[in-house]
Length: 572
Image (cartoon, rainbow, N blue to C red; front, side, top):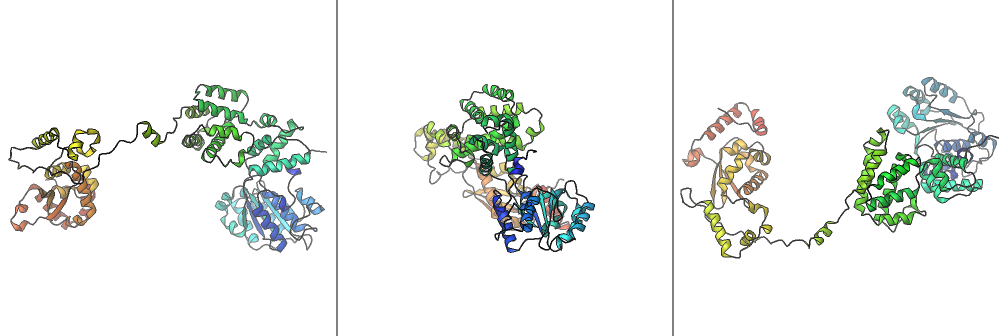
């Protein structure tokens, strides 16, 4: 007798036997029991998680003469055996949409679906696997029958790529009940593998089943197929050695070894480690994926030592917990980020020789600077330096000399230095004698506001940043310092309204204070009146250009936006 694979031999026959997909199996079972079965279903999810199996169980439940009141098929009658084995019958038809994907195949299916079931108590069930392979024309041919199907006709579409159906035939989604299947957890796969081995009366090692379950990557069918491979090598016992030899799985000791290399900073040992992996026949891409999983495990153990993750509940949990104590969580986050970047940028998939890339990844981890808390650095340096409190009020400034006076600003600076040498204990003097405690702004020489304004106007880039579109207007202003603030006489007309913006004034005051070497500065703006006979009415080249510019704007208003945004000026 031919051998029956474990994935087929132990395929579920009842709704309750389907692992992890209770949200689908329980809904279908209740629909059968209550007579509320829909006419079209779309089963979406990764491969090997039970999509086709549940479609067959639904067909069995609808056509089983010994069905229970709860909606479960018996699984042992002739009808159930025939459907469970995947044999084609008059009422239950399985179609591979990958090889029957054209519009002619869809029309033939539509014609067959119009025929009544073979018995009045039976249902016709059409199971289309890999439904995303159907062409747009084939879906269009099925639209009408999916919207208004004949009595007792059920369609079950199974697909791993629902996105493609949504792109090519989005109207199908509204005509089907959609169920999304989940990946099966490692513990569920291990439990099912243990049940199969117990039924086969074969002893097993828990770590070997864990390695197989991880390799299955959420697919129960893949897990049973991998178990078949291991049993082909050693049918007397399933041990971790056989799993490593058959599946190429990297042993846990190898991951513990490389973490010891990283902890000890043994950089040269990285090359020997990779060489040993290749000599043992391991796939470096497989090792890389396992390394990323173990880094994630260490991070979880470092963040929450009291709650071990379920995927590592075996004999190696204590070993990984000890390694996690040697890393700061920040180090593990950076190492995991390095490993993730290697796959996200696609370089690992593009290269045909991943050895160098894996070696460089491990070397970067071994050379990784350890994370140090900022508080620890401060404590090591002897604590945070005491900051000199700022004075409540600034010391009075000497009066600004007249331009014709022999006093100059350098003489005022000398006077300040004399006060420093005299030992007057003011906060300002303390900052002058202690350069470390002096604020950065005191480095700038203190200037009068009128000179600072002229310096600011020369810095056209800064003016454009704080007051866009106003540089030409500001150049035409007359600055005067009075009572500790800067008084600006600005020309009337074009830009007067923009001075009402407190934000523009505030930003100009901050820029002026920076140029003046002061903590703050105050700007007052008055509009120049040419008819008052004062100094504000004098004619200057700037006022002439400003007046001509205003005349141009009055004749061509569209120029105003260009003048504001491009900082245009009038050139003779």
